[in-house]
Length: 439
Image (cartoon, rainbow, N blue to C red):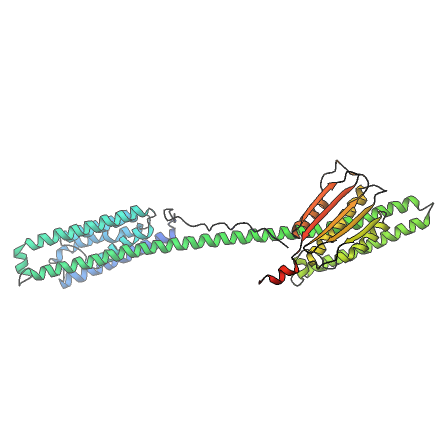
């Protein structure tokens, strides 16, 4: 059995410039609000302890200004995912102003600036805007450090009072601040980018999962449709052949029952035989459907009891039902796959059924099975009339499907001398090729 494989579609990738369009949920806003309030509370505790210890605030009365600055450095974090750039700018500006006037909260404020920088990298979809905003903040921070360093280095009195021993201790202290801030903001920049990349990877994974689920559903629907088509084809072949024969013979028996009871008896005998055959094939088909998981025959689409060896018996049944049929074998038989034998038998059965139905009472038929080393050909011809206005029905569609399933070609056409021709040619793997093939 040959199958046509469609070219694989390239996997859909998320474009790096395509925004993720993540939606800020109420849960995210609640978490950010809790974080902002918690950091503000921590800032209050930090300011109080710093004022008592005198570690940084030279005048405890400036604690109120530190508290005001902490409001702008912590509470805006409640909106950090909705307005990441604005929130980071407000926090950093408040920190620079508070530090310039020597009223900062120096511990929690460091955490809030880190979170602000991180949020820009993690949540801004426009990556150019995210990079530009962070670069502007970092450049502003280093310019502020440069100005602060210059002002401190030129204040001789402050240097002599706070850093006895000359200029070197102050320069060492400022260099330490530069290194700490470079590592601090650099880390926030890097971790923000990594968080955004992780979010993009999750989006890709979710998209892949969704596509796989859709593909699985489509595959399942296609499998169900193919099973329905296969079952319908089998039912059509069984019912159409046997019921057609029973109808013809029943009509003949009704016609001759008074003047030729013996002929009517023979016709009714054919009806009985066709009915038994139909019931047997239907029972086999139903058994196959019930044992779908364990019956490999259904996987190839047909009962395995139908073979080319059954064609002579089929010819006898057709002859007995009123359509004289001859069976001819040309060439030496070669091994034919079971699926091909089933499909050829069904094609022959359908072709003879059509001959009996459309060829008229005097129609005759002939089946030829022609073997060559690499092909097997079935040809069914019949005499009689041709229904020129008849449109192709389920029978011809089923024959084409069976021919394609066998990897063969089907020819259907009326004959010039009357009747119809059905020819199907199926290629077979030659024994020599099969032996030489290493696979």
